[in-house]
Length: 330
Image 1 (spheres, rainbow, N blue to C red):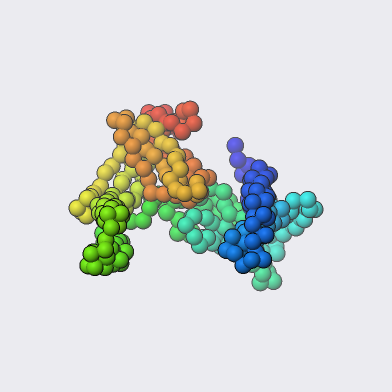
Image 2: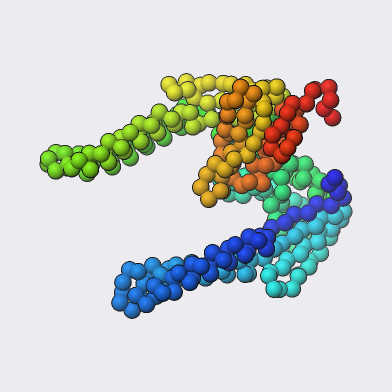
């Protein structure tokens, strides 16, 4: 059970993550070192090896010198601890009488991430590590303000916050936005086709060029056909999920899934470098429905837990869930 009189916020990388990053950096440097011999001859291999070596050194520096930060917020004070690998732990204590206010700040980027910015009596700004659960931003911020005896901050716009009547995954469906993307794809396909059209006009288009041009046309056609289905928005209410998407013809479609229809709620990797994840709803009919992509595994698991709670499902065996009778919910 969480301690109501304490909130802990952390920022940094674990020892295992540092070791992996340092290992990649060392391997990259070892591979690049032999290529430096070509640098004296102004060969491109030597220049590439130099850039690889510099990049490896940057990775190694990040693994060795990146700091870990921990905030421990208790009634009336904030204890801040900062430490770098092989360095001393630096502590700082901030009392609530040194603070004049607090506000929520949303990070700029693909990931929905929130921090708290404190303003001191002297006018300085102090930014906390990211809040741990993106679905509990409002609740965590209110807890912190009560612990520090500060006015509650203004609620931030957060479509994933559990305080909302419906949490929203993805952007609202907009046919005009999809139409603009189609225009971009068509223009790009036309520009890339210019060399092939020129070769065809001069009767120099080879069979290989014809095959490449045909393959590109097929890819563009498939993208145009599937772009409507790729635009979807989930709105999760208590007991049901409303899924809004566009049909193949571009008309709006709405599908509602109840908790009794769901066999399991799972998290799957949905992007390159494991930076994007999707929530997969497996229905009792065997059909799978994937959510819009979310950034970060922790964020996706937090949203997964909120979906399970709202649908009245009971987690069993990790990711799979089974419905709980309404009368048995607490």
